[in-house]
Image 1 (cartoon, rainbow, N blue to C red):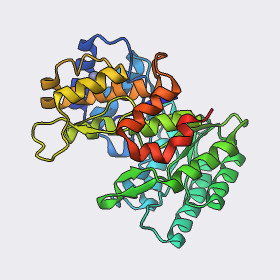
Image 2: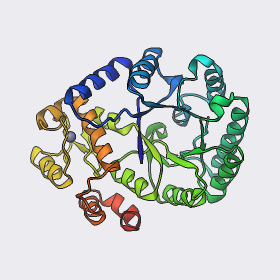
Image 3: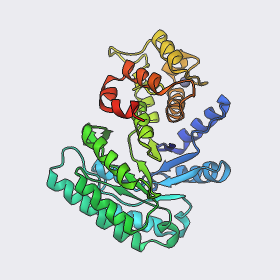
Length: 340
Ligand SMILES: [Zn+2]
């Protein structure tokens, strides 16, 4: 499964992250594929991604629609549509490898009627938007499947099949938090995702999942046969003083945390041993707990190691690790973790 690293960062932070990564000397590359939302990114960030990541390092670049900003009420859906259309139509902006079409994301507090309207908006917008795009963008479009019911998911897939898209996304995870800004998995979204995987099987259509990236969930997505996913959580969690470990939920390691449950150095070492995780950014636990940049890059490695597990860990051993520290995910995904 391909990690698409979400870069919702300003240019100076991105420059620092790249320099620190390079200094670490790790041969892996967490910036092989990156996602950026051009309507909500500064010109300097976009320039850095284009010149440094794409042109120098050969990264695959995904342009996101900004649906997540509409989900949080930061922009009206209609406005998003027009602005994104004008942006993609400008030949100067057609340097990405993939272009996400506008989608109207339902949230958990929406009534069934509102969800249905948003699904119709998504289908209509994708069809209209696609028709307005030049061939270059059409051939590299990703439409996003939305919906809470199987019927709604089918409605999206039917239209996207007619557009002959080779790559689609899924975006209707559960939401919570202020402004519905936190995506999370629940039984409904898992069932929906499994349905989509079954429907697309054998059709040569790649599937991307948007906006969820806690390691135990990433591992479930990988087991389900999802082609790619994007991760913003590596950086957001680091900002909250939290670290991931492969297959593990986030733990607070910042000394600023006054809450109980912060991870001690000893506990961290124990988890590190059992997961086999190594990276240059957590060798010094003090540095990890004090320095957000170290936490960010360590989290990216943990995400990469979840996607490409070491041969030493069997399916059973991995499921055991998740059961050990992430009971909620284990209960939700037990069959997927252990299934063949
Ligand atoms: Zn590490």
